[in-house]
Image 1 (cartoon, helix red, strand yellow):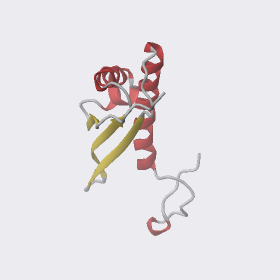
Image 2: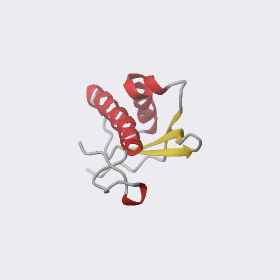
Image 3: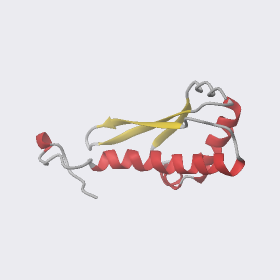
Image 4: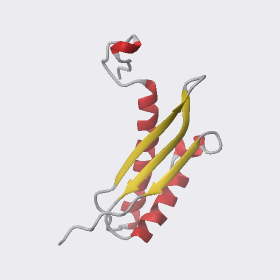
Length: 115
């Protein structure tokens, strides 16, 4: 995997920066645990999405917080339970807990598709 920086930061813009990969890793780890929980319980949730937003701090440059916004169709109650399962099972979340402000928000669930 090629990791780079934008031209204006001394790179050649050939790939993502480390911070971008960090956020993608958190979201990917969480999402894989969430999908595993959904599939194991055979729950009807569709269009599951996780959006990861990092807030930067300076001196030294770092993330001061990370928020994951989770949306899906189906039951909000089921989604909340499965998000808790994913949060406990995610190695990234377990590693960062207590070291970085990482929060998971469940946004308004999408409407389930018609069948």
